[in-house]
Image (cartoon, rainbow, N blue to C red; front, top):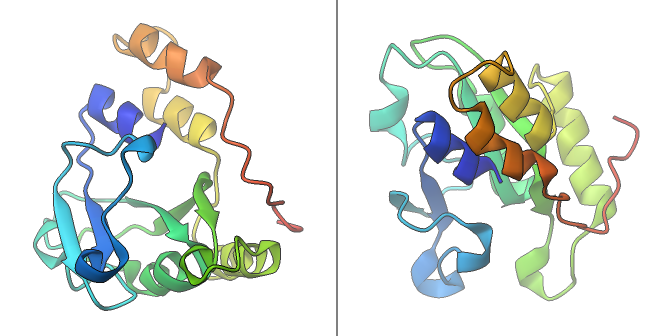
Length: 164
């Protein structure tokens, strides 16, 4: 949902992929097809996204991802950029932890990562809430295009928010 909403609203989005030549690329089921890809080896996205983050018009960066305790949390402290603003963890778009290690998602790792991001000043939000904040008003000209995304039930990750 976050990428589809970004496309509709004209919000710039990109996909940073952790060593895609080894781990594979972003799966089509996440709906990120056609977005620019940034391969990276660092857990933080800041180095790979430096050309984008250096734009002084950028006030906020929305951070979504798969590995909550690694790349998502690793990117959050680097969120300061010349435009100011805080990286935001979008709860409905942070799907798990330890997914690629064959152990399945970890509720503990995910909850701790989101709690730490929140303590560092990130606003942890749901995808639906984020889209509504971007729209600001049901009279927004793109509201009707966003409405089907709001009606979609969020994916059941099997994980809990963990005291946030």
